[in-house]
Image (cartoon, rainbow, N blue to C red):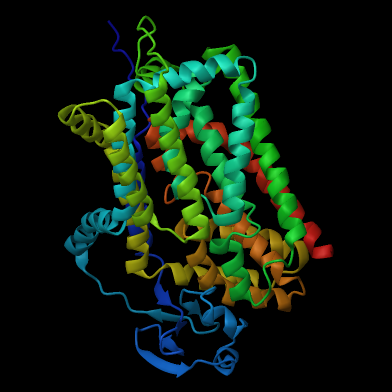
Length: 508
């Protein structure tokens, strides 16, 4: 009897990130360490702090002459009002540095330390995720989700695709205006069950939420964490090139909606066409929390009130992030308050309430660990000092190119940089003082450099393991390979549109 051939199973999100971490560690042995000198503004003392590549610091006058002296084409007011709040790289200051060789055991120690440091530095995000999981556990216990989904499914009968269109549009607007990204993790526990109940698969929910966020931030128009800080650092106003950015936002959002709706309707009509059909039964059991023969709870006033309070939490969260500059500490505090309110109206006794909260939090522990591991990759790169080296070598490579060739190659440069530097504001303050002056040399608008930066790092965020994609996939237990298979054609199409718009911008 012949042995049954084992079917390949794609590794989990944890293994994917650990492999990326290992790859980055190997790259540190081939990419030299180096840093640019940086200039940061001390708002209390009203002076600049110059940090040399080797770490020595000195003080410079807090005036425009200092910026001019170091070739930073940014208005002093942008530092004073906090628009540019991170240390800015000084052009032509890159210096290759000696990296201490810790040997094999030192490398192993660094590899093992990175996830722990990642956990420590991501604790505010992880706290939010665990509190959210606890709330979801409580609401599921009361049957509020099941009753609410049953009611919504009846109302959406025949109009399910509008749920995709409206949700993705709203999230895209949040991305383009204030960088809605990490906060979308909160939407999965609510929307995944609704999409599954409507006849779609969990991949549609991921696409609607994650693609909406990605295309919104890619097509940023007034996002202070990307377009505004990049424009300020490049020495131009963020309204320069706004027409091209609006075109990218509208075209990109429509492409994402059409692509997702087309797949979703195909799955609704024929579930076997789903890329995750083999997980259908498991995901329905996990997210619908009920057997097909089980009685659906009555959608009474108590359940409606719980869902309304939960939903209002997201409205307050969006307002707080956009208008009050909330970070995850404030967001976690908000949802902790919601937990206390639900304790009063859920009808559960104290022991049951606490037990369900802990159980719900434990179900999202996997997501928290993915977030910590992803942050560990960034820590390895920071410790190895290779980000600035990549910036230096790539900027030298693109400096001799002209016209559309310049914008196209620069776009791919930012795709690569976006993989290694997932922070939009961090990439802006590192790259703009170096890249923006190249636009003057090749006679193109500096706004195109900003577009190449935003669209390049935006498109790689669709699949970059160093970003949010693996944490999002972990929310619904979908493997990375299935997501890549789903999204790759769309990525290529959006990349082509980006390159064409950049070329058009050269001649405008």
